[in-house]
Structure formats: structure tokens, C-alpha cells
Image (cartoon, rainbow, N blue to C red; front, top):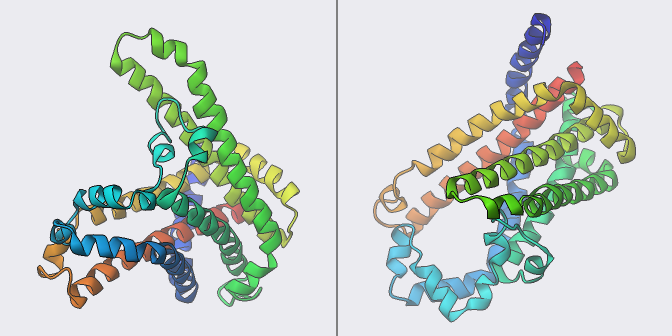
Length: 324
């Protein structure tokens, strides 16, 4: 890479990062829309389970321990008294296991894991549409010349759905081809090694390659959104190859943009895990209305921050893309 290319790369990132952050801060109503969507989905997911979990936690011996802080005693109780609620977790536990998840494990999904998967797919689809609407407002400038977030989202509803379906299929294909089938090809090496750290190293290499390929799918999907919005076109069949070409030519800038925003996200996660015990934060009254309100607000602030970071990354991608 020449000196001029490096300077252009650094200059582009230095311009795109603060501009993307400013675009998020300048659109609080749109950020609120994303937050409300997540809140509604969370409510729909938890309502069917609230009665069972509430009844169980209120009557068993370790209810107070659960309220004061993390405790797996409640999990054991629910697993014993209402196993259908927790469902089959084999697909979750084997997702990045040595052999990976196959159709057999996916077919056994039930209870909470199945509900979470269904909710996740719905959120992924809706967020794909809303991300296209968000990028459309960026293309329209601060005054949202192309319309508001929901209007822009509705305009891309059909091609956005096709793009979401294609991205999900691509994630699945990458996982199967690289992680699952790759593990089967490497199986003789796993069996032939006599040291555990070598086998673990092979597993981590396989996982790293898989995650890198999944990141490639994610960046391609974001660039396809940018292509569609810039041209105000719903032609997904042209958007995806064009996005792949852009990623092939300028992949380093988009990768660095993702990693820089991701580093801030990791800092937010570290801050969350570094918070004191919830019982201490609520003054030792986690079951009071005041304590529950504090815990709820903390969770929602973290959720809003996560959404803002995702929109920031989209803004950075958009800024790099339109700059060329």
C-alpha cells in the first residue's frame, strides 16, 4: 500500500467516524423508533413465559437469591418443574462445538431457544428494512428530503425483505461450508493429534475463519443497502454483486471502520459487566418498584447505546461508500 493510499484511508476514516456519530445524535426520534421496536419484541417474547417464571421464582427457596443477583438456582428449579419452558438446548450448546449444529439439532429446538430464534429472525428482518430507511434519510440530508424513516422503510419493504432473506441464507451457507464441513475435513487431524492444545488451536482457527467469512457477508449486506439507497433502486440482483465488488476493491477501509466502532461497543460491554451488583445499585431493594425501575432503565440505556452503535457503523459505511 502506497503512502498516498494510506493517507487517503486514514483521512476517509477520520471524516466518516465523527460524521456518522453526528448523524445518529442529530436524529433522536429515529433512534427512539429503533428502541421501541426492540422493546415491543422483548415484551412479546417474555409475556408467554412471565406467568410460569414468576410463579416459580416467587415460591421456590432461592427466589430472594435470584432477585439479589445472578443465580442458577432458578434455572434448575424451572428445568425440574417446567422443562417445556426451557426446551431443548442442544443446538445452542453445539453451535460452536467441535462438530457444529446440524439439521437434527435444529429440528429439536423448542421452548425458549425456539422463541428466541423466531424473535431474532423477525428483528433481523425488520432491522434490515429500517436500516434501508435510515440510510435513505442520510441520503436526503438533515432535512430528510426523501421522507421520514418509516416512509423510506416502506419504499424498500420488498427488496429489503429479499436482501434479508439472502443474507440469512448466506450466513447459513458460510457456517455449513466452513465450520461444519470444514470440521469434517479436519477430523483426521483432530484424531491424529496427541496434544489437547493443538486440537484446540485447530478449532479456534476454524472458528476465526468462519467469523471472518460471516463478517464479509455482513459488510456485503450493508454495502448492498448503500448501493440500493444511493441509486434509489430495489434491484437486489445488481446490488449484491456491486457490493461484493466494492468490498473486494476497498475491503480494508470498511473492515477498519467496523473494527473501530466494534472497539467502542466492546468498551460498552465491559462497562456493563463492570457495573456493581444490581442489589447494591437498587439500595438492597431489587424487588421494590423503585429498584425495578432502576434496573429497567439501566437495561434500556444499554439497549439504546447498542442501537446507536449499530446506526453509527451504518453511517460510517455510508460515508465511506459515497466518498468512493
